Length: 130
Image 1 (cartoon, rainbow, N blue to C red):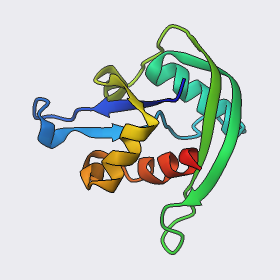
Image 2 (cartoon, rainbow, N blue to C red):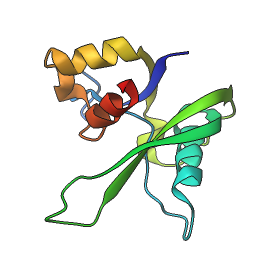
Image 3 (tube, rainbow, N blue to C red):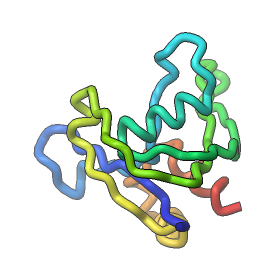
């Protein structure tokens, strides 16, 4: 339905626009041997209470290849169904789910509102748009 799902994470002090960070559902591969697509669906469930019937790999990028070996795999989930949230950590407990249309997410990047987007979110949105 052409909606980008994003988490708004608020860190102390209390939430204000200055502390808003918008991020796509994301997480670390903290289950040994877990395939990237399984991690993506697990994080989607934990953070926004959705399960994707299909995950399409869009792009993999490296945040800082000269510094570390961290890679980000970006998937597009389709056939979404609602499932119970599995929020475990304090950062997940504080999340507010936003549904942002793709056009609006692209506009946020184009007009300089990308300061609210977590670093990996802007290139992920761009990959989804193409």
